[in-house]
Image (cartoon, rainbow, N blue to C red; front, side, top):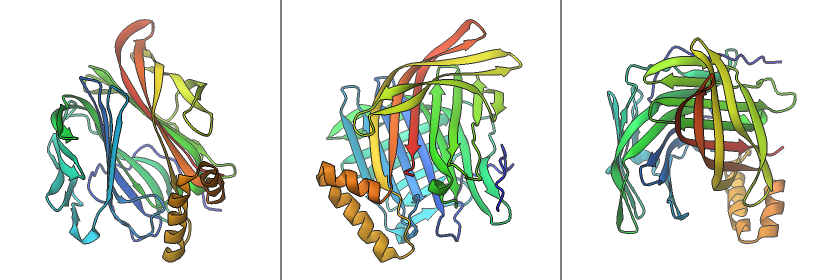
Length: 352
């Protein structure tokens, strides 16, 4: 039986393209920001999505306004019109571009009626975080990598939507994932979270193996204090409680606090005032024949028009659900309150 090894670093920080000649190849660049007026924006560019054997690039943006309105746009891109650098984050599509230049990343992109004009300026430019190699099997060269490219950034710029310009001054985060594991065969669910305050950031994940999987449970965590990497580990203590959801399933277990020991004392993160801002269901196709795969995806999307039909189709085709939450947070060092900020959490559950 193959034995997958867990590691904390590959020693090769590279925010460029890692394309693999493998049907299970996936790769995405992720950005999020919270503006001073309370708007949350999530941006994804996928060179190849999970389970997408055709390697079709896609771009997504989700805008969560303070009044509860959500604006979501997505587009499938023409592969021949996309250029992605292997040396750094530099993604071009027609007149659109995401480009990294030293300590800044500029996003200039138009998708449908939404225009993005944003600059992420890294607030911890001296903090170099190597790739976190979550799962690897040297024998088969299968892996799942995670690069925290900008744990905390000052964001400026704007977006235009519905002919309205929205100021986007705020704080942001950026990471990058790639690999060639068929994740749903190894992972039952993963929770990811990022916490941003005026001086600190905490990035963590809780990746749970599927029963009899050889991946193992993974809990990487990073804690930064004013540009200094104070703690980096593979385990932490946490408590969870059951949260009610909008739509099936009715409940989910979410982390409410995290604690870990450092050379500067015990750090405790407390989360409260959770708000579910999104619930995304999609098919993780597992068919080698691209015509069958395309037909299954069409059937899955068509069934969304009827709740009962979609529920049955979702179970039959092993649909995947992706939740996104916002929360407030307080950070403590021993008993001393350090700072208060916001947390964005995501959880993906793979069907059995």
